Amino acid sequence: MKIVVLTALLFSLSSGPLLADKETDDRLAEAAKAFNEIMAVPDKGIPTPILNKAECVVIVPGMKKGGFIVGGSFGRGAVACRNKDRAGWSAPAMIELGGGSVGLEIGAASTDVVMLIMDRATVDSLLKSKFTLGSDASVAAGPVGKADTDLSITAKVLSYSRTKGAFAGVALSGTSIGQDEGANKAVYGKELDSKQILFGTITPPPAAKPLEQALTKYSPKGT
Image 1 (cartoon, helix red, strand yellow):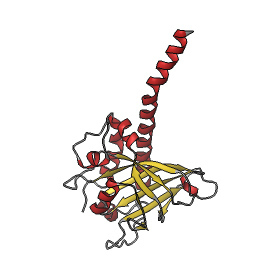
Image 2 (cartoon, rainbow, N blue to C red):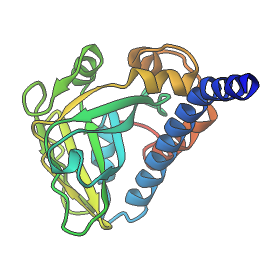
Image 3 (tube, rainbow, N blue to C red):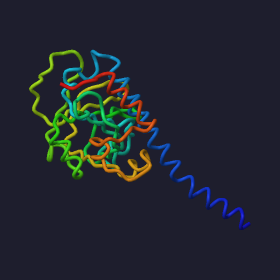
Image 4 (tube, rainbow, N blue to C red):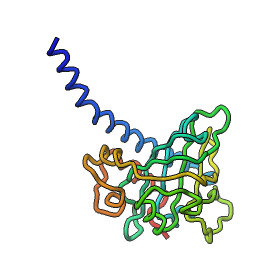
């Protein structure tokens, strides 16, 4: 009996980190998949000139009905930023979203959320503490497709959502963004803050590579 209890305890202690790693690995994989699917249709995705101007991209895949979507709880995703020379992308850091409301289409099971952070000052604010869109940083629904795009857009954050295959700009005022420190540790195997990950010399682990590759594919160099 004691052997059974001890075995169960050891399994419980050892399985926790493994499950956490799988959860964050899956989150990164879903973020990469969502971004690839969104950008695969040029006339319905994020306009390349706008994406090329972004400092960072936030992707929150599969937000579920009944949680953050209808004004409660939170969502989890990842953010990656331009490298120092604006060629290529950083390793991704894990983030949390809370508050606000995306507005889920009736009958839909989930939605993907994408945000472009357009300037470094806003990125720095995000890394210091949790901040709220519309209050600590101006946010606007982002333009979609090949229609004329206004490159003089002044909003600090451009936001989008995809529900039931339909991708469009969406207002996310009132949404807060913060670091997901536990998920960062699960991904990288040690305690790292988002600034170290996004602007340091961290080598992306295998699970993070697909997202880095997806971003590089559609915007290899910033303007």
